[in-house]
Length: 214
Image 1 (tube, rainbow, N blue to C red):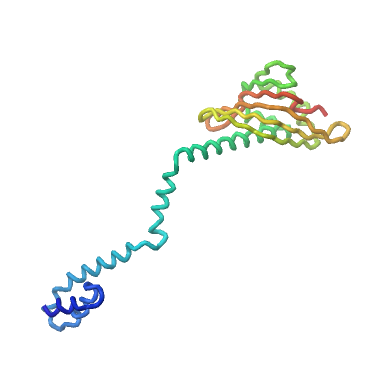
Image 2: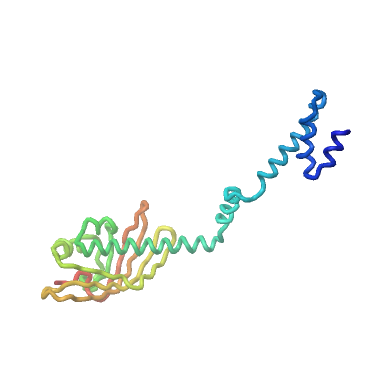
């Protein structure tokens, strides 16, 4: 009872201060009550560890908050990413044309590519042979700079594996007299993703020829 009275009389938490008089008693018979306060002391340590403060304790809460983003926001971000992907692959195709690189151009185009373009004089062209002629006899032989700018690209995403892009194409080139020129065309391209790769399956070009005669 004297030990319990001492524990009750402490100014701090009873579990902590109660340990001091028990530890100072010489009699072995009084050592047995130690496990009870010791367990309480462990509880105190556990409570201290649970106090918020370290950044790692708040980490799971942040992860949960991020994972609960509104579905509409996630869909919007995915849509914007897909549109940028279509614009990028279109720029790669035009770069292959400017460089006269038919091999790179053919990798991006479907073998059954269809097109309406000024060079075809209003006819629907199917396949790659018509385009190969201009690559082999004009574009690959050009040693003058060509620069193309895509203006106001607008992308329609049609499901997971199809998209359509419309844009204005400005082409800067050097003519036969060495003078800089600029031509404009209006283009629409239809893209289809097969085996994880985008391929141009159709395009329509109005205005100046895609390959200016120099």
